[in-house]
Length: 364
Image (cartoon, rainbow, N blue to C red; front, side):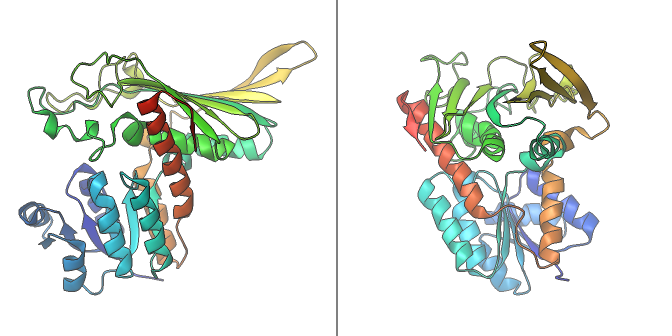
């Protein structure tokens, strides 16, 4: 059994939550890292930990380190992940991998030459309701899966003081937070791939004018995406930032219960040759339908209730996903999903971004 000695890279909300998880597990947290030495020192002092301005510096000061959690801004993922892998550490890196395909490929190459492993934080497909859908698919409930449709409406991302400058709005800056695809839609793209396999081409549609005038021109507040496999099966993804009240507003504080917010919606439909499903994540219900070809109708077979699960476990179980990876490393096993698979999701996301920019169909 491997004992984990961890370096936490990043000082945001995810880092705080993961430190709590590590503390509950009894893992040895060695240090925190931030690109700002002052911020690293201040953040580390909250937990009685030393702070460093680089992964290399932290590894040199703590040679027993064997795991790094890379939880900082997107543009820092690749250099910090590669630095940790080159020191032989295992790495859990928050999604998305990096802002360029070249950096993503470099991260996978670094893992191949390292004694460590790389886990990218695409946790949606491993949470309770998506995992249940995969079980149904593997058991043949849907027959041959022909089409998928996903709708995600979660309010906008101007999540701080409304009078703060745009430079502070990380989630709207592609290099820092990713915009509508790299921050939100990329989880759904990963899910669609998990159910249907790789896609051959993608076409994104958006209005020329943003409904939210404070959004940058290259980040649509509403986008519709069509995807097609090489054998003609199709999927769609629609992401709204411009329909519902935002759950993510921090000033003033706004924390309602998701199912109670009108317009705040996350639904996934799966259509096969034998049956179909509607997964209502925020409504906490999974509706399963069978095709009755004798009477030429579709029948509701049953509804499965997921309301007994904590909300994050339904689709966004970051903590559970991390816990599973940590347990696998302790047991000498590899990542939950190979980094090469995450690379394919990134390839699809870059193709989607390219289609948003050009308005044309883009090969994946």
